[in-house]
Length: 291
Image (cartoon, rainbow, N blue to C red; front, side, top):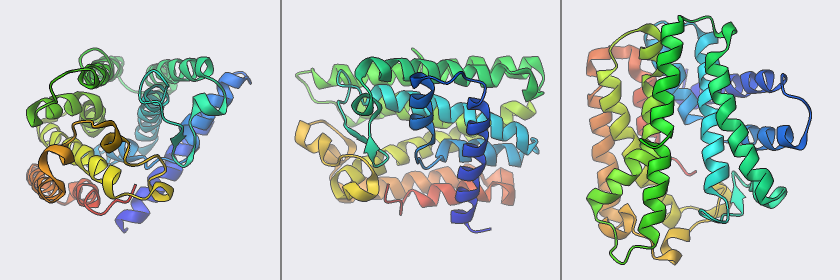
């Protein structure tokens, strides 16, 4: 199966599982906002990482789909809150008005809160049919990846950087992005190993390089991307004078760095053999993605 077909299959499976999971919620504007944030587009790269890493270790596809839906709820929450006027103040996400624009700021905050807690509900559900110890490890590690030691810490570092008199160095930007973007990507990549009770050292190395490559390509797309394809506003970082990989490295060096990180990510999977080809294809996809 071609990578594009694999990714499309992942999107279909993830959205089918999300729709099924959301059925338990009572009808309300809150539910409408959650559906809007979680189901309208999205590359599903984090879900793909969950499914592919699960496949490597022989995890049942139905379990992988459920865990993939949980990480996509968590990711959707982070985007809803990141777009808020008090954060990045964006009015466009995945080619559509952001949640606070379509409804209002209070609704967007609550939609994000609900999506975050719903992701933990999915992972703790009895019908997930996994060992309670493994379920606890998944939940605990996701909390680490998305809270004050991971994603939210990175968001705080980003806010602090905006008001700092000194622009960030490359090292500081890497630290920020490893938390803000990389931590959830890393959790998604090691989820299959956690589910199978196996070591995830190789997947950790892979996902750390992948997360940085993903963020650098995001910075490149902010300069070179087309708004109608990217699905969000472009040139925002440039106009705000924000320090990014591109502003410090320049476009050519940033693109070279992406190539080096992708090679590093693929090399880290050598012990996993052909079973990890889907993860290698995802890494290479970052060099050509347009959104």
